Image (cartoon, helix red, strand yellow):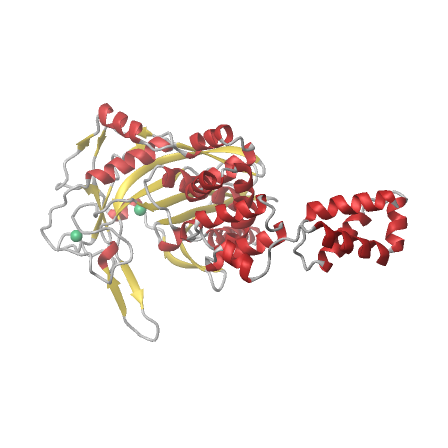
Length: 477
Ligand code: ZN
Ligand code: MN
C-alpha cells in the first residue's frame, strides 16, 4: 500500500497599519511590554470597536494580488474562546462574510507550475502574547499585540509536499510585501503558518483524519514538521492504528510534534455577528481606486528588469522575487551603470552570504555605494576578481570601504607586464613536463600554469594579462 499526504494551509499575516484594528493604539512591533494598550484592546467590558479603514483597504489589496473575489458587503463576528492572551474572551473575526473568496496563487516547484486555490481571506484581530519566563513557575502576558490587524489566508487542501508548501509561502510573501500589505517577517511573527495535514491511500478520494500544526514561523520548521507528521501518520495507518483529529505543537528542538488538544468544531466557538460593528458595503469605485494605487508588482518589475537592463529572464526573476533585493539592484546599478555586473555580484555573492548566515535580506544593511565602488574597481582592472570577492564579503560583514581596504591590504592588482612576464617564464621553466603535455594538445595544463603564476604573485595578478602572456610564450616554444 502506498500513502500520500494532503495539506491545506492557513496563513496569518499582520497588516502594515499604524494603529490596531478597533482602537487607536500603535500596532508597531518591538515596544516595551504593555506599552501599546488601552481599555478597548485590553478587553474591558463595554468597549466599542471602531473599524480601521486602512486594514480593510489592505485586506482588499491582498485579495487583488491573489485574484480573489472581493465581497461587496462584509460583516464582523465574535469567536468565543478563553485563553489568557485573549482578554475579552472572544476574538473579533469574519465568519459569515469574509472580505475575499475564491482566490488563486500560482507556484513553481521542481515538478512544474501549479495553482493553489484559496478558500477565503478574512480580517481579524491578533491575540496578545504569553511570555513564559525561564526558571519561574509563572507566565506573563503582553497585550501589545492584542488587537493588531491580521488577515488569515485559507487555502484549499491543494498541497502534496513540503516543497509546495514552502514555494507557496514564499510566493505569498513576495505578493504581500510588494503590495505593501505586510512586511511578512516570519521571525518577528508577522507571518505565521498553520498546516493541516492528513494521509490517505494513493488513489483514495476522501481525505484522511487531519492534524493541525500550529504557528510555525520558519521554513525549516515547516519542512521538518511536514515530513515528521507525514511519516508519523503513515506509520500509524500501516500499523492499523486509528488517528485522532487534533492540534499538535511542533517542537523545533526535539524535532517532534506533540498533541496540544483535540480539535474543536466551529460550533464550539459560538460564532455570532458582532452587534457593535455595522456591516460594511465595499463599492466598486473604492476597489478600483485601490487597484490603481497598487505599486509595481513582482511580475511587472520582472518584465521591466529584463527589458530595461537587458538581463536574462533567470537573473531578472531572482532579482525581483524579493522586493528588497530588487531595490538593492536598482540602487547599485544606478551608481555603477553596469546592470549585468551588479546582477552577478548580488545573485552569486550576496545571496550565498545571506544563505550561509541563515539571514533574511530584509535584515541586511548593505551600502549600495560601496558595492558600486567595488564593481568600478573590478571594471577598471584595479583589483582582480578573487580579491574583489574577499572585499565584497568584508563590505557585507564589516561595512569596509573598498578603496581603503585595497590600500591597507595591498590588494591592488599587479598589471606590470614586466613582472608578470618574469613570473610566467619561471612557471614554465619549473614544469617542462607540463609544457610537453600542453604541446601534445592537453589544454587543461594551461590552468595549472596560470595557478602557479598567481601563487607567485600572491593572488594579486591581472588574470587576463597572465593568460595573454602565457599563451604567447607557450606557442612560441
Ligand atoms: Zn488599544
Ligand atoms: Mn485566525
